[in-house]
Length: 602
Image 1 (cartoon, rainbow, N blue to C red):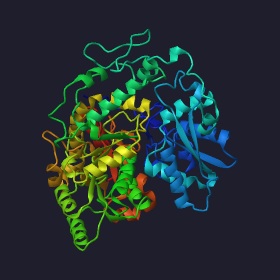
Image 2 (cartoon, helix red, strand yellow; image 1 turned 120 degrees about the horizontal axis):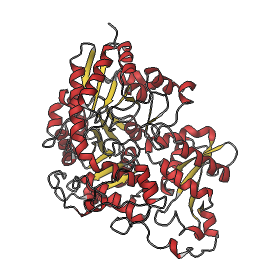
Image 3 (tube, rainbow, N blue to C red; image 1 turned 180 degrees about the vertical axis):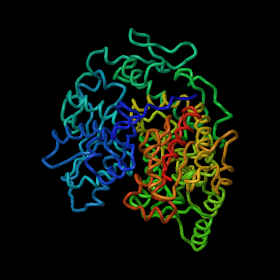
Image 4 (cartoon, rainbow, N blue to C red; image 1 turned 60 degrees about the horizontal axis):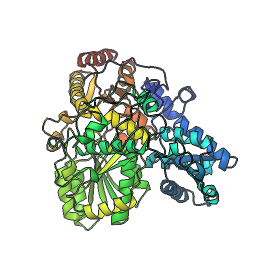
């Protein structure tokens, strides 16, 4: 499977992919554009059509939030939108912790739910649209934005658009007002019958639908057309439920065929690629709105189930993982190098009687692509009684099997699982053979809310059907690019699991036939060299990773601009460029990288 070299949209602030309403990346095509974004320079910010959704609040969400404030707020107030009252309550709690001077009238929740008389009307039944708005003084926006970013639990742009439409029609109202309104009948009977999809997820044939053939092959429509035209805005709950089931089976490894939804759910389990842990099934897979939400809620549930203890962050992490452990609990022991010496130090602390809630680590890490020694970590966890949480986003379960070493495995489905860069999602997996499985399972079952929006689930299921076939090509392309960079004299270092000193730790988890993933990074001997190379590189350039097309970024500038010295102290250099390699023709991709290397001045 290949994709053509992208017709790269070089405009600052254009969506990636271009002209995509719910894109999860944005074009920052030059080094100066990335610096300008971080510094808040007007020439960049004024052109931003979108951004990575946890850092840049989508304009459709902002528009809905402004409408909520207009109806329920006061002058100078703002709002952020969340998918449930429980999530909004956690945001309010974070507010009171960060700004205790604010009273309940200043930071408050408005729960928007379908009005009683319209709860069964077209566009409502089966989807259960609801939004909980947290309204607060506008000059405290930074606090609300921090919760939004770190928790990953804000509403998606699709949910916002759908619910804003209902809100504007008077269908979504304050839940307190609905309680005051006498309950009416559900409306015309035609709105109360099942439409479009029966319980198996098979579409009814209408004038504007194109049902799957006997083989269940996917249609050729672009995904937006698939959802908007074939199923309309009134998504039937059975379609969503089956889409989520298919997603969970794919994450479990038991569903790997690239077929339509109906056929997929009828297939027998793929035992060859299923995760090799006895008793594991899709029942131990939980979906979340984003990858960061899966990490945030895992940490929260661990504290609920095992007590408020410090956690350990082992290895240089993605920025928000460390922030969650530091800001939303008793604190964190941070081992930024992820070295054997760090594990020696941890073992001494444990021997002396120190106790910890959990160890969080990435496999491999981002952006240095180092792999932690999971066997030793597991041995320490079993001996001293802490939970192991492994983020497998970068490695992905087709390349590595980390579940035997983990109590919980988390992942961002936004990345390579989706590939299309147009939907967010995350997952958490419980290991049924884990020491703490029973207490964790009870905690999850009592606490879990499925906040992955219906339309997002439909897109994610569709995008992930060819997940297996994509991974092999991405692995091969990444190795080819790695070879080009490693042999060039102006490249200082290439970071890739295959060539890392920690490769033995990666290989002990590598699946039969698994590769080394699609993510790599490189550093240069000077910032000038890095800038010349990056500015000439003819790929899409922006945040995120795991896209079907190659996506590059000066990662440390974007993720750690206000703490560059801190990052450098752990070997993460400011001139590092990260590459998420896609499905393009290998030779064409290699030539693009060679051309960019030639741009480095002699």
